[in-house]
Figure: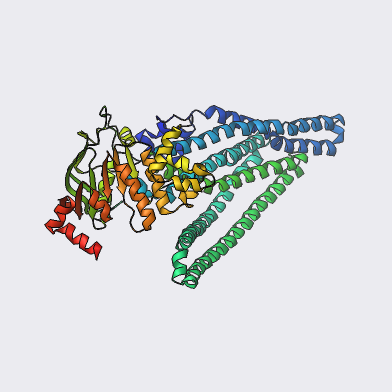
Length: 595
Ligand code: ADP
């Protein structure tokens, strides 16, 4: 199934290497490519919709001037001013809606686009990368970071842009009326900005400390919840509670510090602005007193000065959100620009896959590890053969399975599938001929039917029935009130280990794979359940190349060949009887497990 391109897909932007070196503001700029028309229209309608704010001080001045100088005005002047301001105020509703319409279209599109692009990238990253990054961090990138970027764009449109426009218009309008007052305004603004800026830095620091303690705590809470069964079993509740209490106490103190600092900041802020405002009042009143301007203009300049200070405050308020958004842009691009995608991009595929697998002196080391997990491994497996992998924990059995699936690329030697080197084969087609049944099988929260037919829409009902019978699931499904359409709960929480495993076997069977990868469940199953699973596995294996990480004697015995692993190397290979006779590593392992 080819992945449909989404109308939101932004992958193209991140295919350019240069993006990695770009500043976050530039990346943001690129994200909005194709939306600039909408944003410009939004700004245009913003200016129209907020015109009452600039016109009102003028009208107020006019009205006061008419009232205080009746000899120079007519009564109808009131009416003209009244009508103008009424119309200017009423247009706000439709114009505001149009303003929101344009920016929201652009913002929501980019938000969906970022998530769609992340989802696409996540589906193509190498398995190793997920292990390193962890599910929690990935989730936070797709949800929280994209939200922070959306918030950043929103704040630019709703905080920064209006503040800048207000500032500009207030200064221009003032300059058009009186140069003296403009000089006074221009003088006071940098002083207040400087003052606030100094304070901000301290607040930002405390804020960050507070945030990290909160993040630390949420990590601890989820760990605590996961640990509860263990904690309870060891009777360590009190100890855990005390540990948590210490964390909470730290947060309480930090939070208090922050509140006080913010309170101090807010009041100082308010006082600074008020003092400047009062200066402005007396300065303009003095000019009016000297007859240099009409009395009403005092009110007008007060209005403009309030606008200017409000704009300055607004810009400073947006600052931390912008910084947070920039951080999130970095965080998201970390994934979007990652080169750790799947290594295999081959195109070859045999007309019919037989399931012949050859390891040719394969060596593999995990990226973060010093030691080889698999070393100089050589093995040829014929179609339909069953190979049991045996060895102590950490001897490299699972790594071998990962190499067959193509999750990792060998550093030395190569794996050949039907004679084709694995990096040259069409890996997606290949994996569709491969089925995996693990100890812990991953089910998703849907029905049993959904879980069996995962990714195969429109499966024939007859085929489904035969698969269910082969996987020994008939009895279970008949017992359930909703049968096949019973929901399994999140991660299959409503099912037992053996039931989940049989569903995974059915999922494998329905695909009619050529190669089977099995990690045999060990002690987690009771005898009856084990028998049912074992029986289903036997049916699954028939006629297919099978690799089993084997623990049970019955499985080991029934394998065509046993491969004994030790520290990443194959130390012995042969049938059960041969190996027992040789009295080597296998013999020792069997002795231990039987003891
Ligand atoms: P087995 O399946 O036989 O228990 P594995 O194949 O899981 O063994 O592990 C082989 C070796 O590789 C071990 O030393 C293990 O610690 C190491 N290993 C396994 N997975 C990783 C990983 N993701 N990163 C680093 N080392 C790993």
